Amino acid sequence: MAGKPKLHYTRGRGKMESIRWLLAAAGVEFEEEFIEKKEDLEKLRNDGSLLFQQVPMVEIDGMKMVQTRAILCYIAGKYNLYGKDLKERAWIDMYVEGTTDLMGMIMALPFQAADVKEKNIALITERATTRYFPVYEKALKDHGQDYLVGNKLSWADIHLLEAILMTEELKSDILSAFPLLQAFKGRMSNVPTIKKFLQPGSQRKPPSDEKSIANVRKIFNI
Image (cartoon, rainbow, N blue to C red; front, side, top):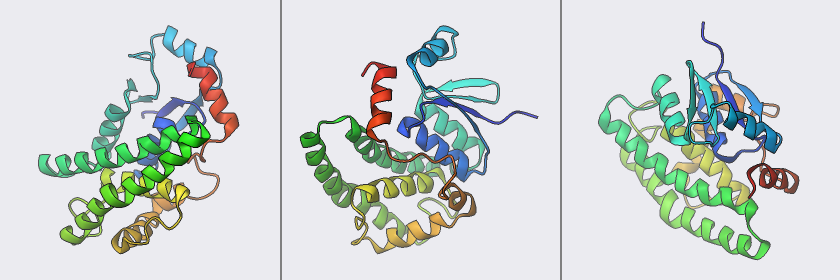
């Protein structure tokens, strides 16, 4: 029997958090080996574990997978969260790329100076409510199902919930004009595997604090 996937990353969210979300939603138990200092990263680089010298890296099914998108696609496909055909997969990809863009803006915030950060929070809020969330609200309305694609849970749904919760950390009422997304959030949060992941004590990571950001800067020479 294959062992549990092992995730190699820092203790923060970063690019690994969406991988944690997807595995947890699929009901897959996983282990984490944290990169605590620069030497831990160098060891992975020197022993040939990192194809492009970068993390995230996930050990799964005898592979040492790198590149966030490749890892996510593999997990989505393996655990039947990637649609029933090529067309559904294309829609899932489009929706996921949208939420990836939005979350990428949020992930950059802790590394920004206070004045820049304040301006970018306003920009993120504006983009979320005028560019991204209207698309998902309309998709749910037009599709007429509980899910974004097809009639079952997919990677797109999981990624959207992660993005919603991240934006709510910046502005708690950000979904006020999106009733279908509010209902979607409630449904997805009650999927048993996701509900478990949202409980205190799970492997979900909290927002970064100053101490963790300082450590990340040191590890990656940022």
